[in-house]
Length: 543
Ligand code: C2O
Ligand code: CU
Image 1 (tube, rainbow, N blue to C red):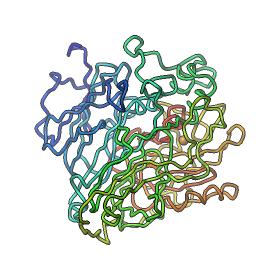
Image 2: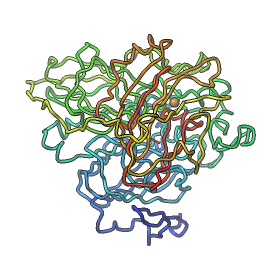
Image 3: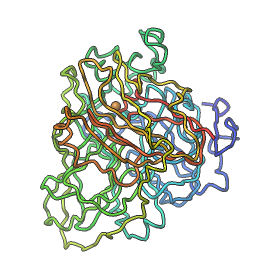
Image 4: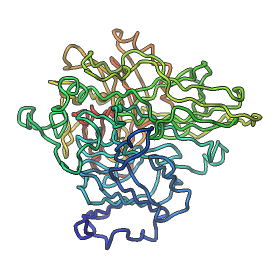
């Protein structure tokens, strides 16, 4: 591919888009502390004996910065930065379709946020350049092209973006090999070891037929012209009714990937670890617990460390949510085995038995997620500080709409998701979705099945781009309270969040602060098939 054909986009806070760079692999501007190249490419990996598995993934190269800034030992890259560092990332699209990267949880200017309107075509690149302003925590990145996020993440595109800061460093938390990411994803593998998404095996024949996606047989007119390339695109044409249902309800797999590998177990030393759990599954939620009932010690969530550790019998982890656990494996006998399980819960995604040949466990079924073999040798004692971080208490009264929270109903029309009845609109935001820079607002997500067929109500994982929010209230209708009782003790609403599980019949209130950046940002359900089929909207921050 010739360099001349590449479109280069550069954006920084307030800088113009479309600035051409001299060449492929150009040196980072002197100011960047870390410069990483992320090449999104089709690839093959050895998941298990037999055929290699076709994936799409980010091949990463560190072009500037200390060696610790990039870990490529796993299928998905791990970028490690310190708060305040300036990061440049060149995303090169080596895929047969357009893509863009969203930095999930980071507070960055709109041109850096990976909105689908910034998606670049095959052979093009997008240059990110921003200063990391977030608290220490476990953030992540993934593609965000409209209508194809589910497919691209499923194919393997994702990575971790771990931020550290001085406050965290002073705690002496487990580090090095004891600071262990666990990215949890469920997948379907066919007999030839290939990932199976809605329209068949990932990567099949992609060289021959690059861009056969997008608006399909129904076209735009019939559904009111606001659908984008969702389920009415090519993807419903492959697998009949089961596939059509999955395109809307979500894709569930029967194999667990940990950090992109089929690795059911690992050996750990008898000492303290920090486990950074990320649910990067397309749709499945987990109810995580140790198999022997030992309580989990939670030290962080989406937006970093909590004020103090919490003990929970189990934690819920909806798509895109993160939980950091502290665990002292020295408390178990040398040579024993500990299993992280997902326990059964009610109210999960229900396909109504229409999944056809898919044998995946239902959302809410019990299964083993990952096993830890406790190593030999003496236990090394360590203690966890009782205070972790300074977190101001949430002040809902500071919201300009304290008396009248904005209501966002998660709605379902004729097989079309929406928010307050409207699907995605690439450049639009309603009056309700317009906010003022420097203010705080209260938003309420209502998941009451308004407009749904057959009274279907299912959980959603609501994510807001560009900021971290506080969860200030939850309530559930009586009709759903029994279901809700099976998950409620595992909801970790403490600290800062960017994604929140909203169960059937539930209303969740969050407090948001719109700081520093004007522009158009997304909020949406992070169950990726919901997002791709309309459960996504913009909000606009005005000066
Ligand atoms: Cu992680 Cu808009 O998403
Ligand atoms: Cu959803």
